[in-house]
Amino acid sequence: MKCVNCGGALEGTMTFCPYCGVRQDIDLRQIHFRDMGTDVSQPCPSCETPLSVIEFDTTPPMRIERCGACNGMFFNPGELEALLDHQTNPLVWLDNVQLQQISSDFGFQHEVVYRKCPLCAERMGHVNFGGRSGVVLDRCGTHGVWVEGGELRRLTEWWRAGGKLIFQQNEADKTKKLFQERPKPVPPTGSIESPEPTDDWSWSRPEAAGLGAVLGALASMILD
Ligand SMILES: [Zn+2]
Ligand SMILES: [Zn+2]
Ligand SMILES: [Zn+2]
Image 1: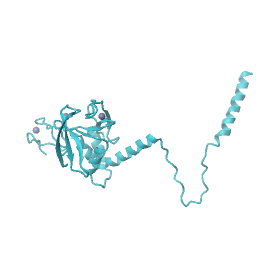
Image 2: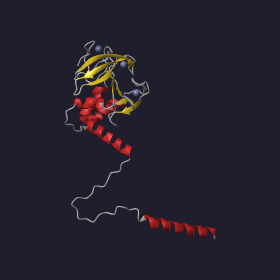
Image 3: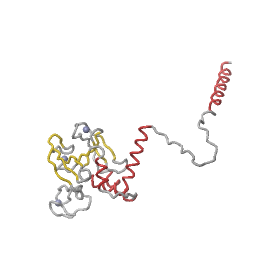
């Protein structure tokens, strides 16, 4: 890979050329998209350049906002996962070594800056995508996530290395927490064992009464 400006040799995931400092557009190299024009009402959360609308060649086609100056992208809820899936072989397996490498490479590079959502101008929060990717995104709870230049490439690598499975587990855990679900015991099938008692609280009731009696006895001893 070579710098678009000076032709200097670059490593795969460099977002800036170390020789001339020009930002490299590495995210969309393998993705087909069309530029649909600029939307002046939406400023880039990073550099305030008006965002452009681009359409990915996915099925169905997906439109997102992108900054032509810093290459950041804004995805509405669910769109980022859909794009990552589009670029990934349906057969995903976990590559723990690569996952660990991607997370640790990227985890500490993110400066803590709070940015405004391009749609509602509210301050966005930070989320570690998928719970463990190490790629920290800015997120508006209503409108979606801001992916900085270079981050989509990282996310794609993480997703392909099996991060997709971690993402799905993380989503399932969040849903579980939300509904305060408890795992239900699996009913025995074809078993001839006698059914388990459904209420194991019964034993504690006489105990509670016994405790009351002991306390009563103690109180009378002290009061005597
Ligand atoms: Zn260069
Ligand atoms: Zn920008
Ligand atoms: Zn918003």
